[in-house]
Image 1 (tube, helix red, strand yellow):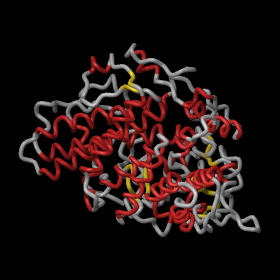
Image 2 (cartoon, helix red, strand yellow):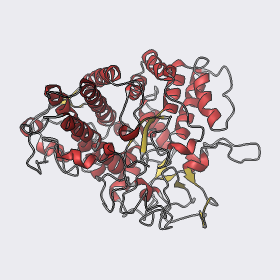
Image 3 (cartoon, one colour):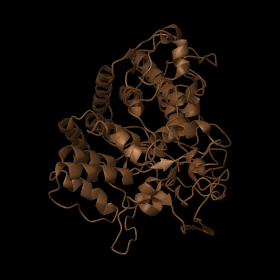
Length: 499
């Protein structure tokens, strides 16, 4: 568990022009202190604090929008909790009754643009700071490029065409900016991640700087971008650069990827950094909410009772490979989800719970209610959320290279899970299905599934899969709506079809 200076991102929120109060629309935010562009960005410390501030919107993004949209909307999970009136906005996502007023859709959009604006400030101001270390300057600029590329990657996949700006914008400009084509947005993402990969150090950061992105994160993210665009040669090239660097490796124990005491480990390329910051009760603090929101409802084995949201579906549980006796043999099951009969100390998971009729809950981010050092309650858990792990790089290489050349990479992931190698000589379609299944299990509750559903080469894949799962997804749901609150302020923002 971390206590380093990098994680104390609240100090970085004093950055001039970075738009205060993450909870508000990015068009509505006003300075909340006397620090301005003129008196900030003067020293190396200012540069580092400004760069730290570019990371912090990702905390709100993954607390207050990502799991609600990218997991609960999929066939992997349903909204649990206390029924339809408990988290109405999440219920709308789960049942595809959402519209452009949905708060989660708005939170996702505004947190990403808060990050973009802060990245743009770093990229504009830090090169002008006199007397700072060139290595630190290069690092700050590389981090800002990576994070801007990351935020735009999160935006373009969910909304399609989005406003694109690579310089800090004023409020008046924000009121009039138009959406850019997704092709142009992807060009910017690729440029940012390529420059970041060239600028950032190869070695992973440790000590007080653990959790900062390095070159491997940029190259791994770029491999993901190329795979999403169907450019498999480039995807495999970037994935193999990470693999052949020898810097990353699979954790021998899959569960260590989620342990609050083993964060930023050998498998981590990029994870959202959280810290136990005391009572907060909001999505925009420095602590993670998922321990409370995902834990079994009202069982008190996690802090704040446990809310039981993000409940694994029966279809997801059925994906785990079994032996001839029908018993699950995949080692990832126990660290990933609670099932009836699972025990922790004196607690035994029941056959059903409120919001979870089959007795399933997410286990990955569990921190005991007895561990106040890691979670003091009030949605303030120190547990990180992984965004990209080395196993994803291996599976990107497998998918991009295809059956035969890609076998060795998917088999590394399967071996760690205690599973046999894939059958040799699978057809292209069968191999792709195997990779998709592996990704589904490997990255459960890590906010990957929705993006896999919509990037599949079959353009009808998401709708077919989701309707088979009993969810009322339609073709229009390939994109989320542009938040109505943003369109009310900016008449130049068009809406996606069907909303």
